[in-house]
Image (cartoon, rainbow, N blue to C red):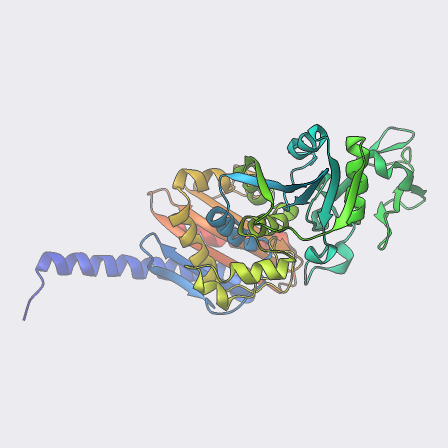
Length: 424
């Protein structure tokens, strides 16, 4: 029989002792933070894949915006470095063009005009081709009353202006951008702005009333016909609309801008519109038609991602309450991201606790520790998942998911942060 050397046994027992001590410390922190009183799922692994602590790792939770980690992974897997911005096909005296889901055209933050310049330069009759059935405006499982909130802009094949209307307070009047919606403003005695649920009628408070904001942003009700009218208004040349699916073999994709320019606001600002539209960009790249459910069905068949077949995934942003991920699924997504994306790149794309994005206001107890992560929240839910490097340089993959908490999300956030500090 082969007998291990005393030195080997000593090293083995020492590692076992320290691992056991660390696990005990994490378990104690779990109780002290109060997370044990919530519906909580946790999985913490070291950089070698060894599980240090787990709690309900096989149970399903609503991921909220943690679903954007999966959108991030698949976008990096399927899309090239440049964005497939639009597609076109010339036929006789007409130029047919299709949206690919690119959210950057005329968006306030991106101000992309590449497609507009292309259309402006054409001498042919412009025909916007689309099919309303290929892009359902709201995701399955979205809260119905979010329709007038900026974070729930409608999904469309060709978003313009982020599918949002910006109303700017001029002191004695409101100015709409795009100007097409100027005639749709109605002044109301209510202090909060709103939009009619079934039409583009916007109800705004008097601009000179006390405490009226300087600007208000509200999603508009989209349709392919409206997209054609907005393009006509912007280009000052007629854009016709025709119901027509794109043939990937006959049409040509045009690539504009960098994919990372979309991923940064997706992850740092948790931009829901970008999350949803990335699904359509992936569909366009693969030649798949929408709506979202059809594209996701195809994405779930992608090789090397068999584990995704065990989750319930219905949208790209995480707005849906129908999404269901397990803690072990989140860790697998993070593991695949580390293989697909270089360390310097995911450090750049993910927000860092205490320094950037939605995590800027949070603070780790030890200033020598660092964490790059994605948060996810809506009512009664707060999740945090990512990569943690402690003061000694040790790396961990972690996910902490809390659902159905009858308390403020800010309390959940504080409890999770207190728990994570044990890794210092």
